[in-house]
Length: 227
Image (cartoon, rainbow, N blue to C red; front, top):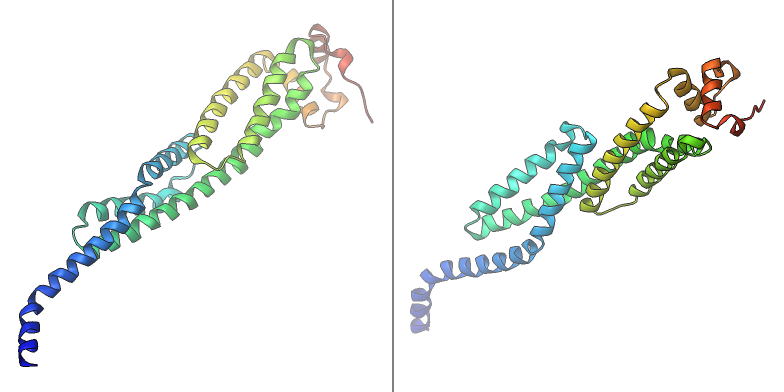
């Protein structure tokens, strides 16, 4: 018994470092598995930030994301023992949750503040312009742009949403510019067509200049009075 106790006593000083090394190895293995998806997560983060910039997502709503991203970067860079590795893993996993939450908020902002307000009206207005001989192509482009924007609200992957948003914002600017030239050149015409598209047109909007424009563009026969 005495010999056994003496042997145990001689081994005790090395047990602490050995346990620590084993713990460190375990956490290294765990965080290695977690970080295998890091490139994809970095792409998601980049796509999210770029999307937020394009759609004008409120900067205050990005505060948590920026804060946690900074904490995760620092934790991963300074993780040199088991405890810090565990902390780094926890912070990194929290970052992934924040990316998902912020992505959902950005998608909601895109859907409610841009698609519903800016893009959806393009559909009815475009359908109406498709009945105007000289504006059918513009009308079709407006309708398709509006429909594509609505379809984009079902995209769940951030890189794909970013690409769709960038493409749609460019297209929206193009159709609005063309609309301004072809329809908005005469304010009364633009007001009348907007009212028709929104189903609020009245006979009072049918001024002589509007009637002349409709006749010149082969659209007079496409409108009728409904009481």
